[in-house]
Length: 348
Image 1 (cartoon, one colour):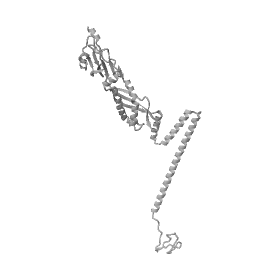
Image 2 (cartoon, rainbow, N blue to C red):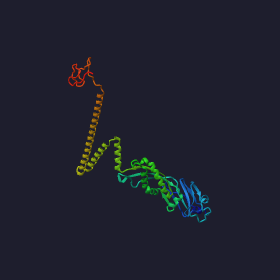
Image 3 (cartoon, rainbow, N blue to C red):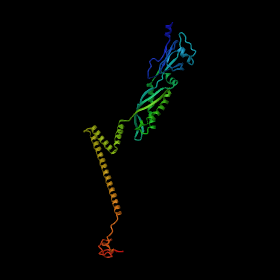
């Protein structure tokens, strides 16, 4: 009888425990007399009868179902095991850990910008964290129709709404599309809040969201790198010349000597660059001339002021009081009281 009794009993446990499984449903035909429940670390066990939650057990251990579990079940407290019959119940094991998943945009997110009618396409990636938030909601929405639920299924659900959340919060918080990561904390917090609202629908809770990197199209990234390098020099004219030279070189290399269109494009680009350099030289020379003229005018004005400020020499007068030369026309007076040339009175 002892051997026969042991064959009837069963062990209710989650044997094949996996880190990527959120819950596992044990639903054998029935729980027999003498059966035991094993709860391992990081697990909770939920008893269901006819689809209704009867009890939640969170403490790890090895329990006798008849004596340790049944007295705590809502509607099965008085259930008596028969010799050949047991209780038809389900047990759901919940993984209580916090899960960390990687995410990445499946398609580029087009940020609105006046310069590009279709928007600036960007891609991003990072991580997010979640855990089980509501056992009852998880049972009602997922566990009722699934035997187990994996983290990959949650990731697919997150990715289905992530692009629109990224666009909404980057536009709201990102003041500069080329400096999104400076606002990554605010953007991440906003996305986590809305993501939590989405996951609550299936009994989960978002506990974290991070943006690790943001990438732009290769052409845009090269342009940003060049502008950053030239800003260190501070000469945009030189940057334009370098850009023209790069365009000429790339066109020539791609087209070869037999590509007439490429050669003509190179010639035109060279003429444009030469004309621009001539214009810059003329402007520089004109600016220097204007500067020299201005400096000359300043110097002449200063000389005139200096001459006017100096005292004029007085005509020498002899002891008799008559000057030797006329102060008006400079004619020699020869001792006369009036100038013999202009008639200027020479003495008071």
